[in-house]
Length: 446
Image: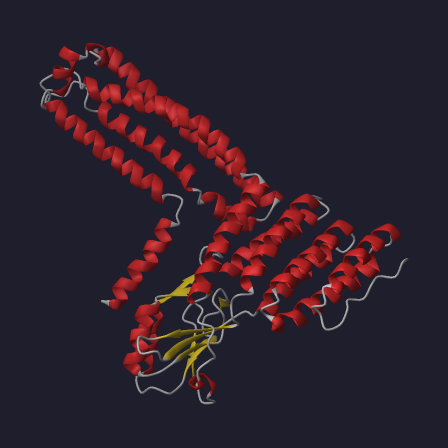
């Protein structure tokens, strides 16, 4: 039963993140609505409305066929045009920003809702069309059903205008970065709320371990914690992931271990892997590290000579500053406890040092000749130093990366005025008195 429930959970996560999930639901709703309306038509709905509201009911068969055909053709063209716009937008976003932002644009619920409205209206209209002059009706035409089709078509036209506005906004880098930031920030908040900040239990410090090999090739995205804890209690073992969540695993390569050898190791591994989720996509909503990577890649792409958009890079650095300020609240160890308070699962966490270094390295490489980018990265450091007061163990990390940044800046920036502005900001940072050693100033001239 646990295996089935875990599979259903993973399938549910995959389905709701699909671009076709909401359009499919709306289309099914319109199909059901068409059947319900046609059923009431058999009970004389149009005849009753014709007596009270005659201007709502179409009485001529040729007119009804013409209206429905026009609606079906128009909505079909509208749908094709909208999909074409989406493909153009996705191509532009992938080319100008980063291919990683494409899943985020696809997942916009508002655009999926508009697409569902188009498809639903088309399905409703087709169902009504095949019932024109059907022998099962007491009236010649399902007049009210035709009137509803006209109403839905008018609504589609209104939402088409909204769709153009929405899709034009969604391709703007400000909107893309804000969306990734919001998703990543929420993911970080969830991690912080679950982080107990306790020391790693001694059971994870032993030397004898039995390794588990990856059953597939893909990204280790998530696991059903409740089901896995139940299995671990049943076999009386603890599980230690040697790779952090979000890591890319190769089939047959060890990625986790348990604290003792089991006689029925194959059965344990089979049951465990039924509750582990592997994907080949990096989704910010599943792991906050992916969101930080997406924002970093967008900044690096903006700094490339082909794009040359430093403004986007500066905005991306602002979002990264806020995310790193949140990340400071997380400990570098993640342990999951069972109901009795015993540590059962430990994840190898990517430490603050790892994430911060991987983020700043490409920004230094592509932005070292731009004094504005260097100043923004130093402002990032200044903000993080304020946030790091309760976390003094992070100060050496910030200091080390700042020294690397200043080394590249000293080698690349030649203008004396730019070097002077950088030194002014460095003096402000040094005057904060948080770093053990002051940051080195740039020489007045290269």
